Amino acid sequence: MGKNTFGKVMPRALTQQLQLMGEQIMLARKRRHLSMQDVADRATVTRLTVSKVEHGDPTVSMGIYARVLFALNLEKDISLLAADDALGRQLQDAELLH
Image 1: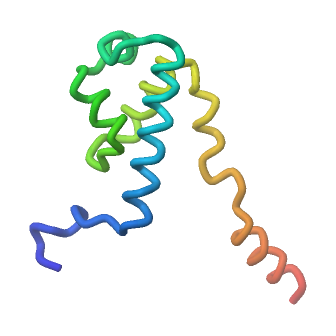
Image 2 (image 1 turned 90 degrees about the vertical axis):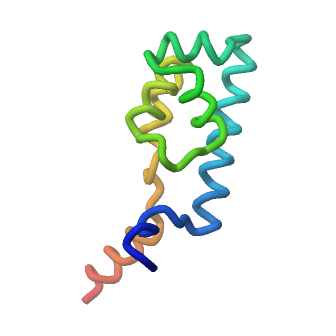
């Protein structure tokens, strides 16, 4: 992997997860009968940025995703990220047994 491509290539599973998250954000916006511009104004970003979020663009920062979720009153969903760490708990439990 060359220097210019480092960080630009996403694993397919991760790309799919970002696209799913974007689709869920878009559906949440539509259920609220808000336009992209409405969400952009509330999140203090551009309409283009909201479009990128809804398409799961990996170049959009986590902070922007958080602001868009806040604009949709979904900011509590951020605390769900990595909340269920089954593998980490299993590893921790395995260490406790030794």
